[in-house]
View 1 (cartoon, rainbow, N blue to C red):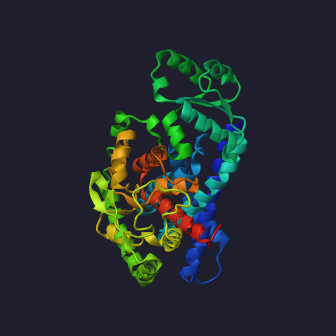
View 2: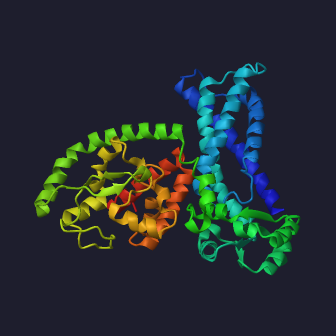
View 3: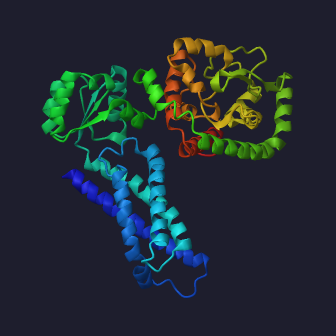
Length: 449
C-alpha cells in the first residue's frame, strides 16, 4: 500500500514539475522576446496544455521504463540521479522535438519556448526528485533489508544503514542467518542483497526462488554497495568483472576527445589567470630557504608510462619519498600556505597541456611507491588504464572523509574509488568532482564552512 501511495505521489510531482516548467518557459519567452501585452493564462492553457499533455504522458512512460519509480531508486540517489535523469531527459527531448515538428496535427511550433522548456523541465524535475527523498524514507521506513555477502562489506553496509540519518528507518537483518530471511518474508522484507558467490549456490537459489513469489526483490550486492558508497572494493571484483565492466569503459573515444578539448581550454585560461601569481610564489620559495623552486617527481601515467610531474616545492630539500603524515615536519612555512591554497599544483597546468594529465582522473602515484603498491594491492594497475588527473573522485571522497592515503591499506581503499570512477566516468561525474574540488579548496582557505 505504501509503495502505491509513493508511486502516485511521484507521478503527481512529476506532472507538476512538467506543468510548472512549461508555464515558466512561456513567461521567460515572453520576457525576452518583448511580447506585447500581459501574459494570458487562459491563452496558455488553450494553446499549450492539450498538446503538451501528450508529451507529459510519453515522458512519464519513459521515466517508468527508466526505473524512476522503483522503490529502491533513492538508495545512492544523490550522485547517480543527475546523470541518469540527464540521459532519460535527452530521450524525452528528442521525442518532444519530433512530436511538434514531424507531426502536423498541432499548429504550434514552440521554438524558443520548447528549448527553454527542455532546460527548465530538467531542473524542475531534478529538484522535485531530490525533495522526494524525504518522502521515500518516510514511505519505506518500516522496510527491512537482508545483506548476504563478504563480511567486511556487509559490516560497512550495516553500519551505514544503522548510523547514517539518510538511511534512517531501515531494519537490517543478519548476513548469514537464512532462517531470518525466510521469517521476515511475511513481515515487511523489502529486498535481499546477495553477492555473486551466493547467487551461484543452487540450494540457496531454490529458497530465493520461492521467496520471489512473496514480492521480495533480489538485488546484486556489488551494485547495491556501489550505489551506497560510490566505490568498488577489490574484494567485490575479479578479472572477469574487469573484462565485462572496465574494458569498454576505458575506451570512450567521443568522451575522451571532448574531455581533451575541455582540458586544453580550461588549463590554457587557468594558466593565463594564474601567471601573475607565479613571480610572487617563486620569490616566496626562494626567500624561505633558498632552495629550488620546483619539485619534479617521477609519476606513473596512463598505461604505466613514466612522466615528470611539475609542482612548486613545498617540502625541505632533503625530504625523501615517504608516506605523507599529518602535520608533516618536512613541509616548509611557505609550503604550508601553498598546500592550503593548492597553489603548489599550478605548474601541473603544463602537464595537462602536454597531455600527460587530465583535469579529472586518478591521481598519479610516485614511481618509488608504484612497485610496492603493484605487488601488494590486487588489480592496482587498473588505475593506469586511463589518464591520471589533477584531481579525482578518490581524492575528493577521501578528503571529505578526512583521509589522505599514508599506507598500503589506505591506498587500497583509494583504489575502490578509482575503480568506481573508471567504470562510471562521465561528463556529469567529472563536473561533480570539479565542483567538490573547488568547495574543498575554498573550505581550506576559509571562504566557506
